[in-house]
Image 1: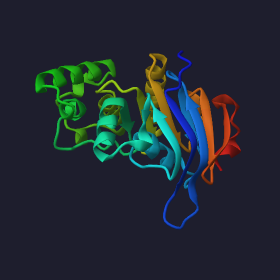
Image 2: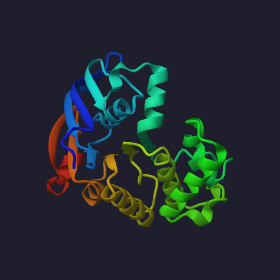
Image 3: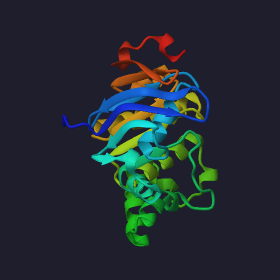
Image 4: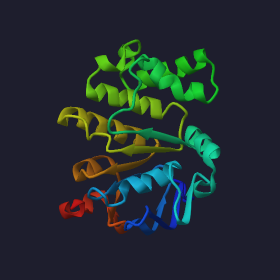
Length: 236
């Protein structure tokens, strides 16, 4: 594993309007190939941190560097290119387009990046096969189970071969069996070298598929521990 950080946050703060700080002087380093959980109760600052890493928001102070890019200094157009080239995102509610087939949903990021329809479809079909859902390639998302739709969403997130996979409560809308399936999938991807940052309030998920857990409370990073060492009260 490289010792050059893939993610480096230095003294990052973010406040919205006149409310309390969503993040306060947060510093964090993640190495390539790590799997890290961001854990904490609702409103703790987890989503703010994820949005800063994705270039969807900017800090009021501090710096955010991902894969050598000063994300906090990017304009809107450059941020979009950064996400397209370096970031894969998985959401709680899948965010698939119901009027596109599974293959077309997965291929969409590559099409937006300029790949030809044929090349994008070939890459998408390869990912669907790798993730075990190729038999649904010509189906529409509405005909799939929640777990299958989340696998499609993960395939789409991997389409442009991102340096960083961001997963925001990826099992929150799934039943127990489907959630365990997605947990195993994230573990397998990380074992293959994919860097994963997982935002969750589920300690069991953090323990199952990450090495480190960062606890956030009231906008502050309070713990940075091996995931197996995190106590249940850390999510409160």
